[in-house]
Length: 180
Length: 178
Image (cartoon, rainbow over all chains, first blue to last red; front, side, top):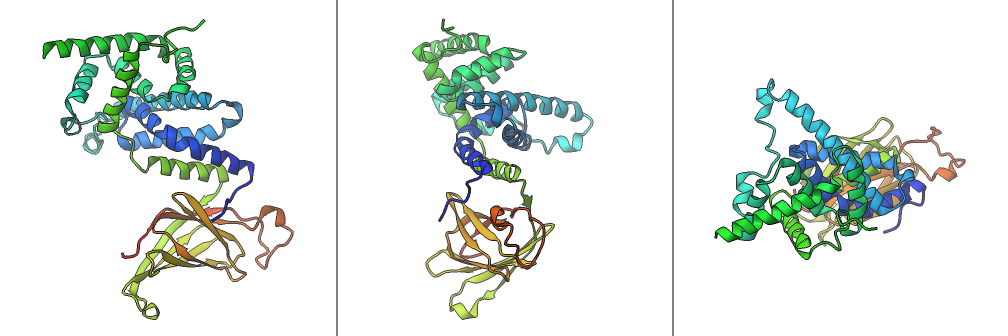
């Protein structure tokens, strides 16, 4: 066993080795929340990481890396999702091959009672809120501020809406527990 | 000067617990594929090294290797890249690991690494392009062929070629029985 790399490229790779396992699950959720199928989601997540390489020199803090990755993945995922929607209707043969990006009924059939309540409450929210909360839930807490700032500066600001989405969800949860 | 919209840690405790539930929910119904991070790592390594991906061109399993006195088969795999062909032969060791013998064509004194889930083993190929890993744990591996140390370029070997690219093979699964 030995260390293999001492070059700048190697140092970068080592840095990324730590971040990749930690942040890839978050980016997967970002891509899937945009409505991508599994294969597209994987492609988008991979290409975000690869394009991070050429931006690493301009990003200093780990939190800023997270924010950059989330923003890039989300933008790209929406772009791909839009192009898929455009091509799908004419392409009925492929339609069958595209897996439903959302969790399927089979997936949700196995939820326990509490998860089911959260799932049902989430589905009463706007698609925008659903996407937002799904992303925010996976952002590591130390990076949260940087991600919120980054997203709220972009068009279609995500930051300010978080409070509103959370309030709605919590209200929906209270309503449903009141029912039972 | 903190805005409560951006500062989650000082938000209501119920926010944290709701977000934790949302996270658990999606981890249950739509988790990232377990090997995605590994594939990302490979894509990043490849892009970072400007390495070339070799492709698998041939694979064959043979009858039990008579000389080893075990019932295990051996397997040979050939990878091709623009400048290099990599052939490897995999034999099972009695302890559950595998032995990997390899040849590079054209022969080059390169450094060969086998990347494992957590770490890498490295050996040098000799002047005939032969190399061997006597004991490699089972699992998913990838072979990386690196040019002779860049700074030792002056000591050019028989190939006399210009600097070669790093070559990375696709991932393959090493098993004791296949």
